[in-house]
Length: 232
View 1 (cartoon, rainbow, N blue to C red):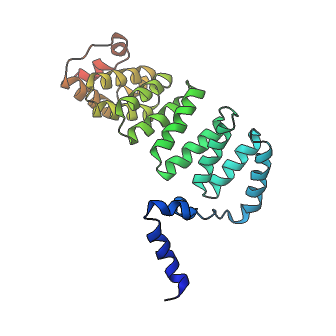
View 2 (cartoon, rainbow, N blue to C red):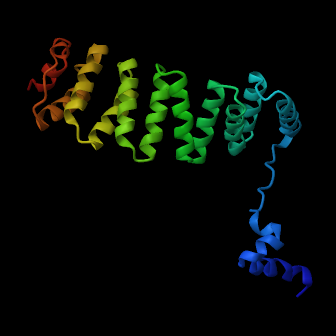
View 3 (cartoon, rainbow, N blue to C red):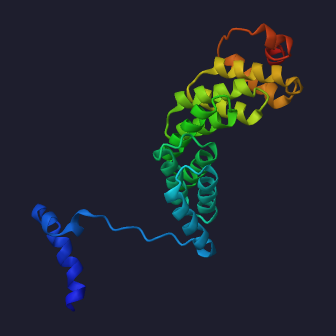
């Protein structure tokens, strides 16, 4: 065995002892990750990084940089680009936060996705999509109550959107809140009357109405909601 091949094992043993940290600086440092290979885009990435060092709050360059990183598959780099922009005191940047959310979601970094989605909701509280994104992030972390609140808010903003309704209904089912689920269906058929007589909607409302006694929404009844659901 050569001296060079024994060196790593000796270093590993020495690092087990507290006093070794003072003698060997390497003991306290984690190995650095290799630089991401951006392929043909590497010169552009490097150029943008250098320019952002001088002007970290250049919105256009920061967005171009993060988008380029995401496009080349550098997901961690894309999230860092968004974090660096915020850390520099440049304020909220919706595009960077969108890219950060996407990258974190692909990385299955649930906490990171929730952080980005929360920043987006704070920046644009009436954007239904951002409410859904934060709801999905909370769902992934098992925070069903918070997810339901965000889905409900998104539904209030866009009550005619079936995907939002579906997400809300799933959360209410998990939380065992059939009356809230029924109320959501009633609001949905109010916003989209053509759905009131669809067999799947009528059946779902009938099932929910049979589970418990829920307050009747007169407006929903007029729209063909609960009346249609409970009529044989």
